[in-house]
Image (tube, rainbow, N blue to C red; front, side, top):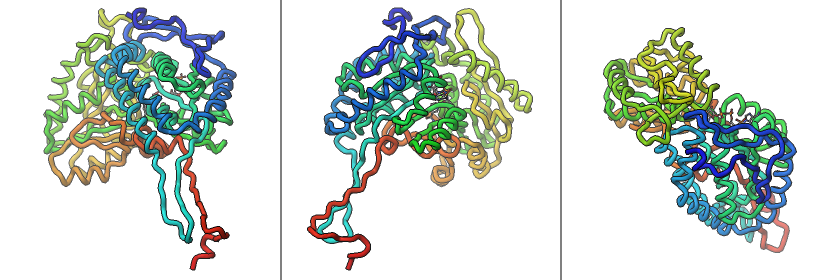
Length: 499
Ligand code: NAP
């Protein structure tokens, strides 16, 4: 299967519109479903980053002068090519990342949606016109490109997140240097090919493969990368932010989550169970928005537990390319070890393990990393399993007495990405959307399912106030410029010559 889908044995960097073979060290890219080697990826040097930035700087000057509607035409073409190749891209995505094919198709579709949405921005990129305080004077604000921007992306959404960042950057007139995660470089290779075929001028996007500690670090330290847009873990993000702060470099961070579904006593429990199963175990819980806490009203706790256990039994686990599977593998051994560690922590803390809690090594699962969907109950909000990101198919039920306590528990974590409430009470719906302290709130749906024309991101420890996707993404990749045009023919002094 891998050979049929993947057409190269070793990936090359894409710099200045050329596929540049890297002569140094490489590492293997493995299918997490079975451990098979799919291809090799360069572990490029810091010098490669310098070359990419130099090329991007030259290309950006001309790109910034290309009218935005023309820049957008390239994105329309990118969207068309992604649409044509949707099935192939989805299969490759499952191959390198492991998520089940249905979800891979959803992720690729997210990228397609983003292409057409951001292409539309080529004819908007709205600024403001506003009255001036003096006669015969015109005032407006416009968005200006920033220059060359760096994007650093994680393995869990290798194409969607890249489109959330690169498409707004490009339509706004910037050039991009992109470092994808070493675990999942194939989506970057495929997207670079699409940019090339769509006619994006050489050097406007550059892909440099390599480790975070070398390539990522070189990008963060590069003086000519004026923006770093990063999605990944909290530890890495904090270090990047500290360095960018030192350089006064704009940095956008999207990091972890500890997302909760609240189930109230008046909830439609069948719907709540569906929402929990989908958002807790989809992508094997390896989503930043995955539900890893269920805050349940004590009156419905037992019924909810029973129904969850019934539905968890039905989850089929295995290679994501098999359409019948609902839960795929864990990305790698380190991911697996982290999950196992948290199972032990949960037990030691006194949470009750109702299902799962173990690695699956059954015959037929090959050399993949599979973990059984896991349910803890009687967890308390202060436990580490209820506070820290596990990034696996593990969910903890926390019983509460009332709505106010549910909101308090939801907000009592350092993260603030996504939350959800199941209730039929319209007053609680509106109180919850006001009081839940997360960047994304769902009512009567699980914690996942963002649409690309809305801002994506979180409060508190999840980010630093910026947003991916939505029109808000343009704020990361543009500077606001205030422009005053005085046509009075004399010097008019603001605040002084006003009568
Ligand atoms: P990670 O280890 O922080 O890696 C993310 C990216 O940063 C990778 O490309 C990585 O490169 C690179 N990197 C690592 N060290 C670096 C350094 N010192 N300087 C610059 N770049 C560096 O995160 P991950 O484990 O791959 O991703 C999972 C995390 O992402 C979870 O915490 C999840 O919640 C979060 N996430 C957040 C969102 C959101 O929008 N809020 C969305 C998806 C995922 P290499 O891996 O190639 O070395």
